[in-house]
Amino acid sequence: MGGEDGEDRLARYHGKRRFDTTDEPRGEGAGPAGELSFVVQIHDARRMHFDFRLEVDGVLKSWAVPRGPSTDPGDKRLAVPTEDHPLEYREYEGVIAAGEYGAGPVIVWDQGTYRPLGAGGPGAFAAALERGHASFRLTGRKLRGAYALTRFRGGQDGSGEAWLLVKKTGSGSTRGRRATPDPRRARSARTGRTLSQVNRGTPDRTMPDHGSPRVHRSEGNDHA
Image 1: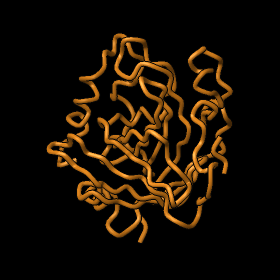
Image 2: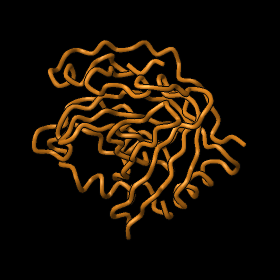
Image 3: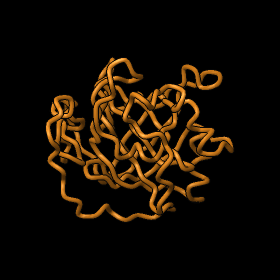
């Protein structure tokens, strides 16, 4: 964050991609539009993982979560920071071309809005992330309730940095093995497809949009 504008914050994102080959968004389109958004994508790249992204200061602050987010408060999930992504990436689902950074299929497993927990609104939330601990409430199609991100290791200039993503008790909590989806069987919240179907180019089964839940920017299961 640190005062950088959106274009500067996307420098790493642009530097890793060849946009004459990849169909990923360049980051030249959508800007902030009211409610703060989040997205969870499943990405079958060199290693299968989930990407957890929160809209912060006009970009998607991103973490790779190898085992995926859990709805069980007893689970502490490793979350490794990656480069900031453009807001258009909220809608990205497809196959990143072979030979490109992150080659492999991607689905939007969950999407929705979030609100920071605590006083001060989005600016205070960005500062909380800088300090290494932030709590927020998700209102998604699959994930709901309060979560926290906590940095437990931070190397110089972000090298070796690692966080924990943890569900808080209360709304949206579950226990046991159904707390996290099987990434190979999970279906897109946008199109109903699995990773293998996206990889094969199966036409989407576009899910009806009944309207995203509306939330405010600050506040004092089915996992298939």
